Amino acid sequence: MNIYSDERLINLGIISGTVGRDFGSARDTKIAHKIFESLGIPPSKILGLKQVHGDKIICINSAKDLEDYQAKEIHEADGWLLSLPQTGVMILTADCVPLYLWSADGKYVSLTHCGWRGVVQELPKKAAEMIKTKTTEKLQAYIGPHIKDCCFEVKEDVASKFPKEVVIQRENKIFVDLDKAIILQLTAAGVDAKEIQTGCHCQCTCCNKKDFFSYRRDGTKDALLSFIYKV
Ligand SMILES: [Zn+2]
Image (cartoon, rainbow, N blue to C red; front, side, top):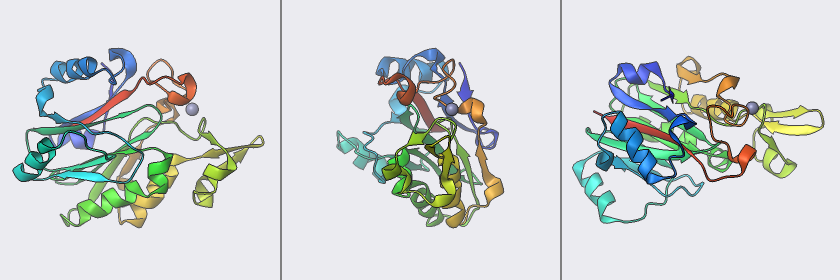
């Protein structure tokens, strides 16, 4: 199983990453469960949400937060802030960005589903600011596999919602660099640029058909699993 993850998180003992397509589409709950079981994580400990391309983040920082979560059936949100041990969170993506953000001591970990709409709504910045209300530790980030500026062509209406420095004109087409847009937001929220890791163009979900699902390329609902589990 190919898992794209950040060594710094793994070194903190936090099992996490974005799972490549070789296991199948994690949109299928049975496949998602198989992935967790193969990693020795009880699937029942993993919390899910209903992604709506918004900017809401669910906090699971106490047993009470977990109870409140479990009392509700549907959770419309696009991100997590987690500190409760023996608990995990997941999101699904197929071109959107799985953004991992954490305090350097590993106590607070955030995972957000940042499509272009989420980025425009400043979800990355909000996640960073939310962790900063909890801790004075420095923040670290990993921008997981997603559609990169080689393939993320947009129309003028979408491009106009982004800062000029992340919009690229190429051969009469317009592209948006989501990595750069996220880095701008995180640094504006006080994250040091050198603490932000992002994958190479081989981690573009749209170009790399062998390893990733891509909505833009295939138009299907197949999705990649991204998760964080706090041991
Ligand atoms: Zn590409």
